[in-house]
Image (cartoon, rainbow, N blue to C red):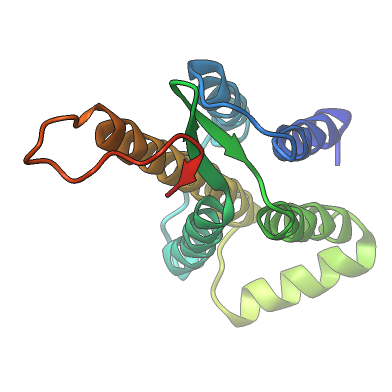
Length: 182
């Protein structure tokens, strides 16, 4: 693993740890993680292998990331208070994020050592994974799925709260009281 790999992983962890304290849902809350994954994509996704079982591997890892992102987004507290949507990562949401990040980090460290490389090469041959780039794409898309779906879930929940709050007409459902959660 390079220094850049470590920095990216640490930045993504810090983003969630920062959200352990409640904050307003702002454009920065959404754009910072998206900027990090965009930069990661430009630097790590130079090819997209499709031979052998590369696509099922990539789809499996991306699917796991999507599920983790959805669960993490649902475990994050989203509430309306003082005219703003406020979010706070719960301990469960942060733990889930750390587990997924820890897996990717551990995998990267393990696969960079000779014994890990040998086991990974043997597994890849036995399961028709055609290149190391397939593993890179799978791990990166796992992270992308987790980040994008978590953010999307939080933004959608925040949008629902805002819509409920703005729906002040008598025929609309009652608006949530300040401090209510979705």
